[in-house]
Length: 307
Image (cartoon, rainbow, N blue to C red; front, side, top):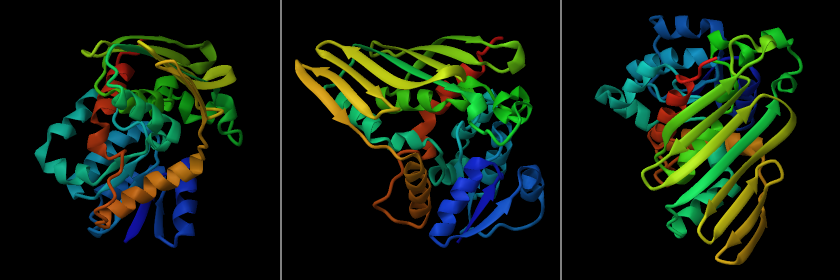
């Protein structure tokens, strides 16, 4: 089994490093060579797996080509941003490949978010509200590159706050289930070009769940949290510090969770590999069909951005 990694950016290099440590055979394909590689007559052995780490705007075409070749893939987030691309979920001839594929929503492996999901399920919370907020400074992400070269700030390559910080929309559906996009508001700045520097997304569900997600890539302050309010329940998880505080039926909650980003990347990717090796006790929480709800929410929100 080989792992074919498409892309040569920071996340591609991190995945390659992790794979090399476990002695997997890795084939690296540069982003600009990816489409020509997949459309060539070169056969990809059926036991090979692919890891998509290219710019976001290429994900749709790469996923389609891999589905046609029936090659399972691990695709970095966000998954598919073109509206029509979601039709692959309904295409029965792609079902076999999609069932074996995963999306790089590694925050689903965050023990604090898993704890929140369990609490909501245990207490059968229906009537609740939630707020999710993430603030960061995009210029500090890849300091070895000039600002004008950052694909995160290039709308033609799928950049912007909502796209880059789509983890938040994913783990909202991971915790609360099906959500509907009610409203999207975005702002930009002259130096950002045509990408959203900040977006706010309002969501609701037929279970009387209402939420607001704010994503910001032009903030000088680093912040990332989720708060949940319901009858006899209030919880706040700070994803920077790992602290979960609040109250459930007058019981004080004060816990701390350790989250290692690289360990979550390893777990997310290695579970995908083990799953495809036939290990029946492994069922990745970020398998494509388990991310159907978040894929639709992210796609809908992204296509409602108006600057």
